[in-house]
Image 1 (cartoon, rainbow, N blue to C red):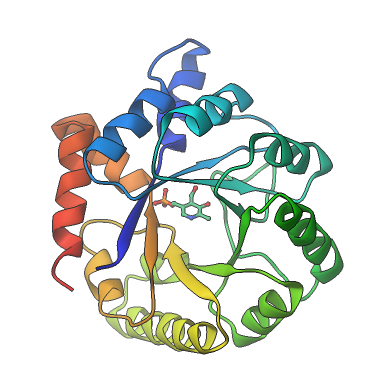
Image 2 (image 1 turned 90 degrees about the horizontal axis):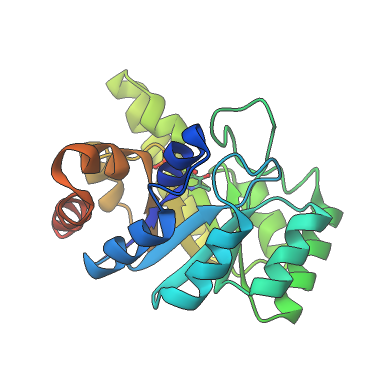
Length: 239
Ligand code: PXP
């Protein structure tokens, strides 16, 4: 069965709206773990708009499932990762103006910087993953740069409303997953997935883990976080 990683940034976004102590993403992560999440993802952005260093430090101490830290290649954030040592670091592109991560990392264009960051993280025995669009040239560059894993950006698929376009995007993801798997990379995927569009993603071979945030946290507002996580896990059983 494909594993579920829950992204709890959205809980921190709510907290930061008031710059207060609640709701606490660390508390949320514990509830997700108890409900069956197999990893917890947080993105420590350079502008600290949601997750704070304190959250990552506490998560490192408290959760027992995999801690996946999404991050840029900035010196400051890489130093935090070297200090806290998450189980996995996922390098993502970061822009100040964006609402959420907009596209995959351009590993081809930023090859040297990414390769250097990967080796810095690997010296601390942190598993490294690159968040990329489903393009073979990005997979080749990821492998060459020394990444252990990739996370395929499913945003284009999630945003597509026309069934033909959805099919096309699914085919791209499927082709990329097969290609990366045969290159020896661990294949994960995520972004924009919800209780409906996840179904077709589950049919794709070689994906090991899905990272889902917004949809689970949105549902949690109405049904509670443990229930929202359990419902997603239930969906993922159909594979
Ligand atoms: N994977 C990555 C690399 C992301 O940046 C995000 C969003 O923070 C997600 C997965 C989860 O996306 P969503 O919140 O749309 O489920």
